[in-house]
Length: 32
Image 1: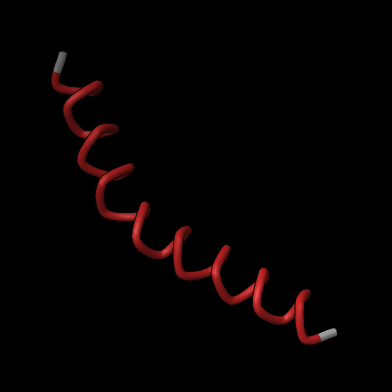
Image 2: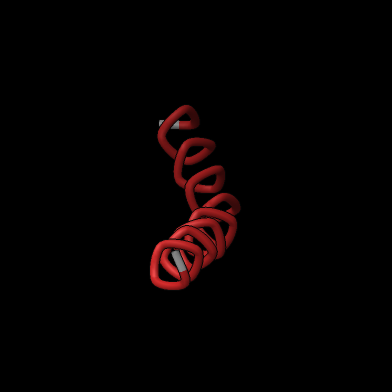
């Protein structure tokens, strides 16, 4: 269960980065 817990923490840590990357990609796509 520790593996699942560690995976969940990693997802929570990387979620904001993925959201920011998606927002940046969407903005660059719209301005393109």
